[in-house]
Image 1 (spheres, one colour):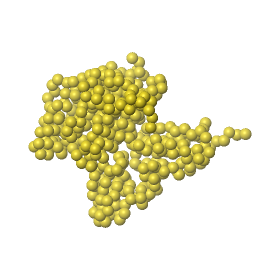
Image 2 (spheres, rainbow over the protein chains, first blue to last red; image 1 turned 30 degrees about the vertical axis):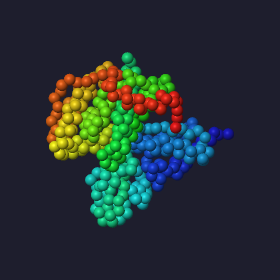
Image 3 (spheres, one colour; image 1 turned 90 degrees about the vertical axis):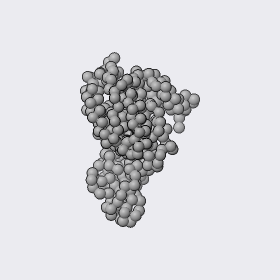
Image 4 (spheres, rainbow over the protein chains, first blue to last red; image 1 turned 45 degrees about the horizontal axis):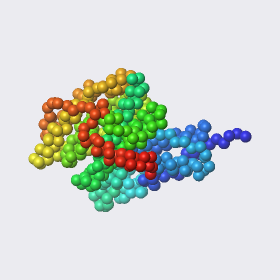
Length: 154
Length: 252
């Protein structure tokens, strides 16, 4: 009998169900933190931390192991990859759209206006560079007057 | 000392700087002057502690004696910590904390930048991760220094005093010891002499914008890199290590 090997695509498909614990509308695939899946000799998932101090790092690693174990994958290993460092550029377009719907303005390229995630107006102003988590700043919309969070570029 | 040993100790020392500054900034939680600072400090502190974890984990792996990040942080006595004296200095008033941050972070950014080009992949990887965060921290601390220095007469005088009194802890950063030399020569690591010039240039620019006078170089304190600390450090460590010392092996 041939040893049970898993297909990379299958594993990636299962990983696309794993949510980020702090921004649960995003999956770890949307965030772009899954670097590699190696199916030789068990399954090794390479993940990259977002911020050094991100408290979600361990929680994400545990969720990945749990998600794959739920699918019957017995021998899951996690590898932390630091280089090259994660950047918000790796958030997928789908992820950006999900953030917007959730009410968080997605990261914008340098010097581009930050649009209100609700009314899309670009007439916005920064309230505080530091928000509820390291990755977010606080903004308000000058048109619809709603406060919102902005996912900062990194 | 073999180059490999030196690199392991060097990584530990980088972890010490990050952990000790992170611990100092944690002490500011719940006493910051405004909510934005509260969040900024807490988040920056998390970054530093996260960096310390990466450096310690890496040092532990290289050492191969089974020590993990917690062993480095919680089970080493004062003299085994090799952080700069600057980062262990008490928070003082808000201006003191900001000046300490500006002086250290403007050095740390240059050091990390050099480390991203070193030949050791592990250290270069951690440095590349950390520098993105520290650039941001420095932006924050230098904005504050300008605001305080170029603020009222009172705030100006108080941060000028902070700058003058913390200045004597900056000399140590640029005095290369055996570890610095080995990492520079064997791993294409940072050249502290070159960094000293760039650092002075950067700090002068911030001080000028803040209308502050650059202090004269007088007597400089040293000893942190050899494990001889200022009197404040024991108290910091007692606080940091209290749980593991009281209940050895305790886990969440």
